[in-house]
Image 1 (cartoon, rainbow, N blue to C red):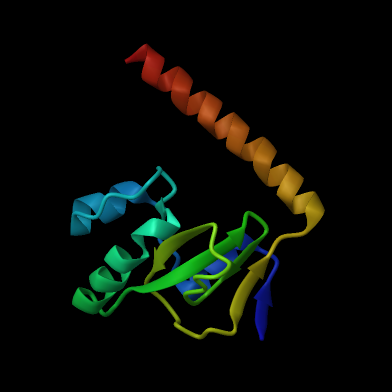
Image 2 (cartoon, helix red, strand yellow; image 1 turned 45 degrees about the vertical axis):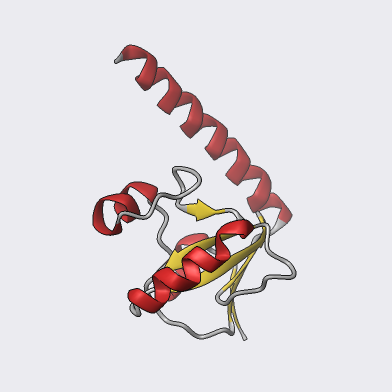
Length: 120
């Protein structure tokens, strides 16, 4: 198993698409949020998308601390698309300390985004 503790390394290996704007612009696929994730109820749509776009595959967010590089419908909290290595052994597991730091970064980023939107 290839387990990554660094999100960026996991993204490089799996090819995780982390931009909803890229998916919408390039492929007309609207994600659930700006991070490019999709609710579990959209799995059939994602499967169909991957059939039509074979360079993509689906990854599963088990939680904010674990992402696997395959479809795991029984454990999915959300899905995302990837365009890299399809190896199902690739996994991302975030430590408790990293998880806390991630949420702090998310809050700062969302606050900054909201501030910028208010200025426009």
